[in-house]
Image (cartoon, rainbow, N blue to C red; front, side, top):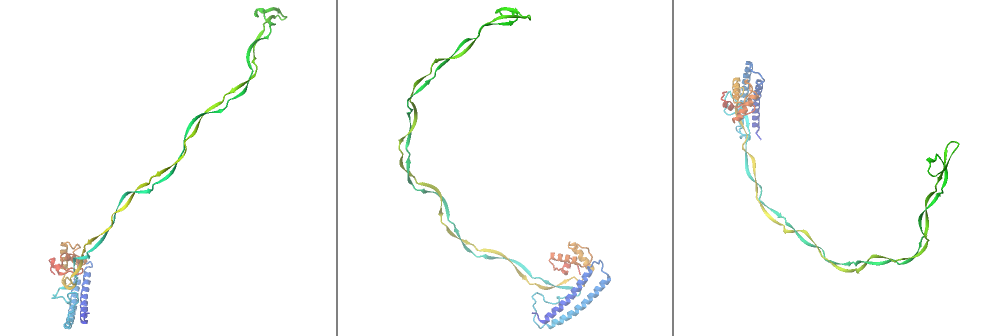
Amino acid sequence: MLPTQTRALVAVTSLALAAGCSNLTDNTTAVSSGEDMVSVEKLRASENRVTELESRLAATNRDLTSAQQRLAATDTVQTGVGDTSLFPPNPKPGQCYARVLIPAVYKTVSERALKKEAGERIEIVPARFETVEETVLVKEASTRLEVVPAVYSKVQERVMIKPASKKIVEVPAVYESVSERIIDKPAHTAWKKGPATAQSATVISQSTTDTGEIMCLVEVPASYKVVNKRVLVSPARTETVEIPAEYDTVTKTVVSSPATTREVVIPAEYETVSVTRIAQPASQRRIEIPAEYQTLTRTTKTAEERMEWRQVMCEVNMTRDTVVALQKALAAKGFYKAPVDGIIGQQTLGAARSYALQQKLPAGSNYIATEVVDSLGLKL
């Protein structure tokens, strides 16, 4: 914990710096509001404001000097952020200073560290198997009783199927057909019309009728016809007929050799099968595992953060001509691309900060260090 006097001194210093920075910010904002020319009235007002601020700063310095004298007998206060002086060393009139916090400096260090200690791993080498073919007994040998069937053969034999016999047969009468010519009509006479010349030579006489027609008596000869008639040649009779015996050839199956039995030997049955057997038994082996290392990257602090006073541009030590020269110099370096208006604004501050970072000079977002001005060849 800081002593009470030290805390009071820090509070007073903070108030003084805050008042000065606040006024500087207000004026800078007023200048960057877009006006292209600064009027004489504003310049006079700025000079009066600077005079007022210098009077207040002198009063504050007197108060701080008195406080420092009261704390001279006490121990030196260690704040842990480097420079603890409340005023810039060897200040010069007409110059502005800003107390800035310089961050701690870190560096990345790589080192090789043990990740895993050396060890030993036991690996099991599995057994190796192989497949071979073996002949195995499936069924044992045995015997069985087998029946030998009878042997048959076929023979032909003539047998009588009907014995001899007698039967009385009736012989019918025998007839035959004969033709005979008989008189159909006997000879006679007949009257026919017409003269005798128109008739045949058989005309016996002719006569004339009352009508004048000639009638001839003609002799008509007898007519015959042929008739068929059936005459008996021999009368019906009976005869005794001998019927011979009837025979037929038949095929018969006869036993050549009767049925018998015999004992049959059934051989054993074998089969070839695939058998898996161990070719090499399982074993184990020990494997050395080397230690594992890894590269670790760590960040170490090479310098503590500290407070530092830097000389900067402000209302006291810069004019419009100085700002115009600064903008032109930054534009020539390729950092400032806005119109050259002689007004300190965010574009001017940003361009100065980019240039300072490139040149590895003190840089800030809301101030321009005099090292930047000197690097550009300008004079405040």
